Image 1 (cartoon, rainbow, N blue to C red):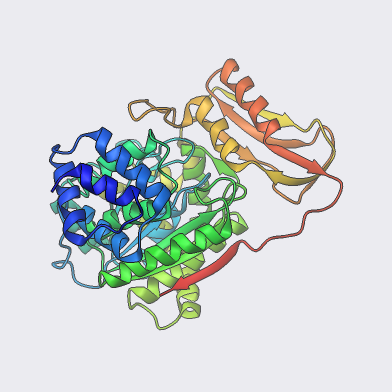
Image 2: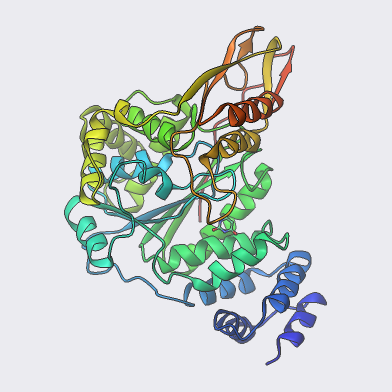
Length: 435
Ligand code: URA
């Protein structure tokens, strides 16, 4: 086979066969197809699209390009969860201990943040000593004993996607439905869980800005997962403003702990309960979502969910006293309010810009190699629909120095739109997609 012929076929609107896709992914992973030919292919896919069958073949080819984890020696149904990424998204930190406290086995692979979206691994590393670079044996042992383990993607999981994603990132070919769906699902299939619950975001802080695109992506991923024999479902939720109030690593860990103490923001708590109840049903812990929700609430009110986070932190080398007393985390040297220069209702928040405020203060990576300042970020004091007077506090910024504080403040103020009319409330959970 020749890559030239496959590029031409796709460029002219043809469909690639399973054999062609398998050969292409194998050869690209092995370094036999150069990046410039693969870039031409992703651009051809971007413009011509892929059929459902081609997307499924691409997903499986990428999933099998490296190790396929076998979790079958851990008793019970193992459930994984994946978010398409957003601003203030600390969901895994609250959700996974909450469902593990209900008896579910959670074996989770997580990533680091890139760009304006944060990653669970960076947040967990806020606990002094915490390691996500644990061995496969420790990972499985912790799932068996405490019901929960979270490790970084240090293994050779879907290496084809790793290469392809980096290429798409620099060739303007990320936002194609088939490429996103196959990228996410190849990693999830390789990670070995029996069931997968997807947290698909839509809005100005998400990949999928329009709800119909988020729904189409969710349907595609749910179908890919179910066809591969893993029970898969998706929740579409609002990312037109940050999730909760906190944005930034330590600040988000503190908000996740508050939520495990039953004192979390309403939107974030609702997302955790919705995803949690579906995970418990998928994992065979309870019969329906109402029962699942009641179990999740009980795990929080009894303190068992918080205790589970402490067990996770301790089992992976971290200091669990920070779970009991989150005020122990280090603080940024500058903690200062941003006051409103306008009056009116907040009608729109440019959510990815809020993520960028945290990034410019050092809370995110500009490149994969950057180190991040876990202390910086912001706590929103107002959200969409709130009425604000001149001089009211909009947010509290946590910055490492004066210069980045001023940069973030300027960006923050530009990210908000004010109006005279109260904006119409939008549902936070938009849809649940099952099959
Ligand atoms: N997340 C992924 O893992 N892949 C994509 O293509 C987009 C988001």
